[in-house]
Image: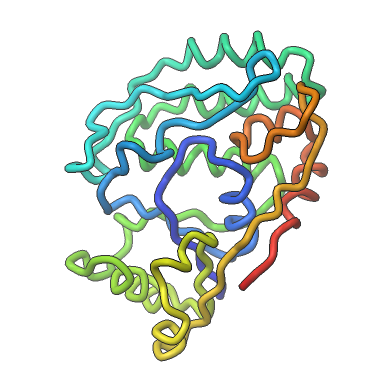
Length: 229
């Protein structure tokens, strides 16, 4: 069984969805400290053909809190308006806005559950069957930290392989996972160009941009462009 484990992010770039699509089960790592200056509550889209950073409003977004203690308080009216203005000419604008509406109106505003729903909405649309779980709901050893916590979750879930993003190469050691009977794999995304609402391709934008410009079949095709190490 292939397992992925990553912190929750709002509408992350395609690399995270490549990881999700590559595994059988994906654990949203929510009982760890919130990364305030990271990408948990922000990402980039295109506005007037230029990269534009957007943020969503959260409460409790402190590095002293766990993701389970953070709440989404944004009503998404600003982001909704920005997307309408910026992407109204996108070929899959209506389909994407319909998906995002299911995300924006989700009643459970707890950050971890809100993100779990957002991933589920997109994966369902793409026809990807990866099971989504929250680490806070697992019966793993909550006292463990770092790689020991990851290994514990892998063993609890019966994982044969653990998938992480390429950035994880700085954190995890192949041999240590092998010694525990688990194959460590890193997903190295290739950000394949697709037509955008700008002259020159801008890689690494939020999955929102990918969805706006590509059909579900087209997005599934783009998800295949990665290598494993």
